Image (spheres, rainbow, N blue to C red):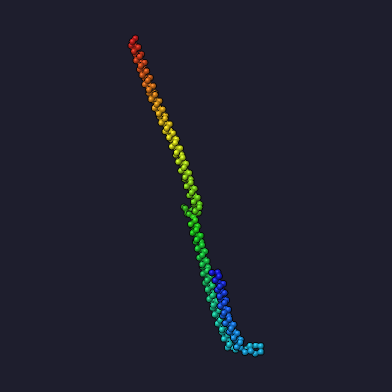
Length: 191
């Protein structure tokens, strides 16, 4: 597009040269057809008037062409400016779309995807660590609870054994006491 305007001027210049050559030919013809008087040339007034009219019509024609070309240049420049503005607007829109594509909006905050990814993975890792900590603590609690249950069972068993021995001992002492009372009664009765 930027080469179009110089090409337009080049074409205009070539076209002008072709038209100028017609004017030059008419002038040469006028000079050749004129009479000479010593060192001056005499030109007929009606031929000079015809040459003047030709020159005026060519200048008017060239003025019209120049005006038309200037209008065309203005239209092309406005079209070029409009296209450049549209291009800038499209570039801005593309940039906005790239930014929108590379950003995530969460609760009104616009975060780049990389930051969002780091935050999400950090949260996931923290949750996994918390879960592992809870599982380890729960496992330790289960082991402690199992040991406490085993200790309770052992203590209960020991208590039952102790209770059973204590009952046997009481019963044995009770029998011995009864035997001793019977023996004492039988001694007392024998006497």
